[in-house]
Image 1 (spheres, rainbow, N blue to C red):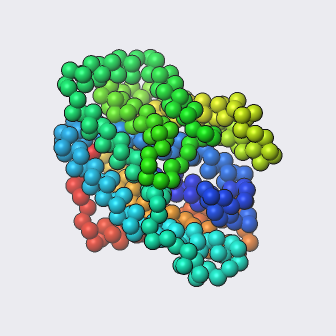
Image 2: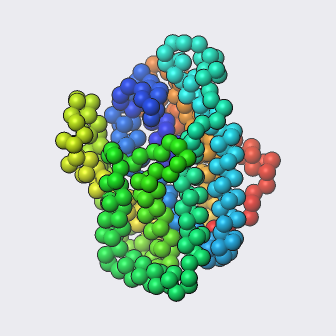
Image 3: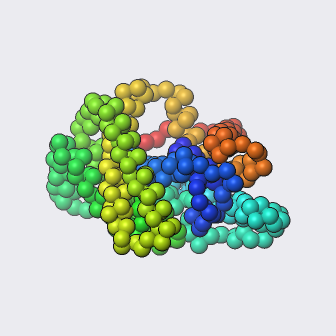
Length: 360
């Protein structure tokens, strides 16, 4: 979740002209910001869905299918519905305001450009797809017990063996290779994008099954450092592949001629996901395995911070537009301001609404 804040602030300082993906650019731009955008986008949501599947499986084990459905409706469905109604118009205004400032127009006129409700989940798309995957998981739990046991035993043999990483890498790479461009596509509408659903379905399903592998979390501590370092290096290769792909496209190269670069990006990116997933899980278990109040607070706050941060990130970048400083200085200040303001809003809401009892 925290990586998403850095990603969205960096989008305003990446190289290139404004586009449909991010319609605002600061006059100061940086290659470093571009690498942050590409690299972070490659891994943050796959890692999120791996952990989501892990804890979803844990919730089913503790509370049953019915309790799982109720819990996910409250923790995923309700924020999605409320955020879609209340937050997405604010996000729309933030972008309209940024575009007006960028074009030298009247910023207040941006209010007239805002649509009441978008035709899709907007930046809350990850909650929408998570809700879909949780629904599919709940339906799978209603299949005949004998079938579920055979499937579980098969997954346990594969994911509990030495070939675990290779199998997961091939599955995720196959899903990512169905996408039309390098890296990961961001869906727009409510109609599910099958490539996106398959990609994050692999991550969610892997997390679900890995929770059932005996000793997985404890075993991930062994070699977590080299996995994390190797994952970072592989991610860097994939990031530069995406950068080269876009540079070639900007020079006029057609998509078929760039297939090798696209393939390298997807294959290396999918490998980086699992190396970093296993490495980070092991590292967190080694260093942060014991309950800590500050860690619980950070976990609770991160969800809220991600939900509300996007318009703050846009306004922060726009307000720094006239500051005569480099792109990286602006990126650092805007990121810090976005974190602090989003976190302050969490504290304000927490002061009014009591915290819920911790659940999986």
